[in-house]
Length: 378
Image 1: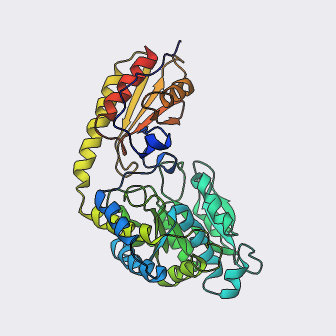
Image 2: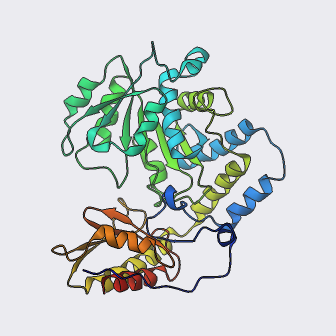
Image 3: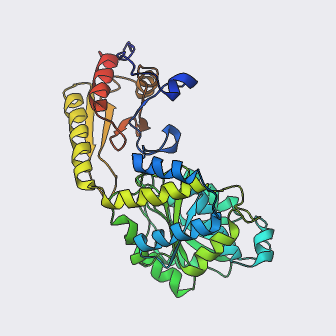
């Protein structure tokens, strides 16, 4: 099949990106860092600009925003990190070194410490390297589609610092249910870390993990909350949050390089306020309409199969999965051509096809996606 170039659309008025020389894109990947996370509410940007005009003690500011994080998650305490990956590193450091100044300065050398983090094989992600960056060693349990309770029981030893549990559309099936994980870990005095970075909205996901027994839970500040992209939320037990703070910036510790600016701290505080008052049901209906527009238009093609997924427990916004029938077209070729378009369209390559995530689409983007794909496939 010959692949033509996608439709060319007239560009808008020059922006800062035009002046720098970087094209603006249509983001059909969702709130992912590689394409700029999400777009912040103007009130968030105003708070950041206001924060830039004064000096403040960073630890005091982080502590006050941490109180807000504790309030919205139902945790004992909270702490702002430099993104959710930094929260993974600091969570690991907190569980291994605590607030012991000798151990804190020793990391990532974990000699003499409990330094193993148990993780389901089905939950392995590219980003779990951040646990290892703190000095931890990962101990896998289960196989991609099955894990037995006895495997977790056997994996927990006197070397275990924590059990990690990941809630993400990118993990596979086969993990133990969360309540079983918590029960087994807590019976042995081991904390449970939950990475739920990209699971917002719905708002209830902010409280579900602490409510169900997590000792530490991680969220991105720059995804569904729409705060500064380089911000993250770490919530949990007082002692573990104190330990994360001791291992983090501005202290001379393993997390020193992961600093959070006063502007980002103030912006995240405002983003949380805005997130809590947003009508997420209305936003979801808008995204459902966008996904339906894409799915209906592409479903008419005999050379393609289309699936729309709309479970709020799995995806913060609906996604459309689009794949060829009988090899009628090459997904990688179409994916690359969409990125060369005007405007460039970025989507994901998934399971032998393309996936369009509506979470970050702006008005009119769904129609441009349909036009571009149609032009490419002919």
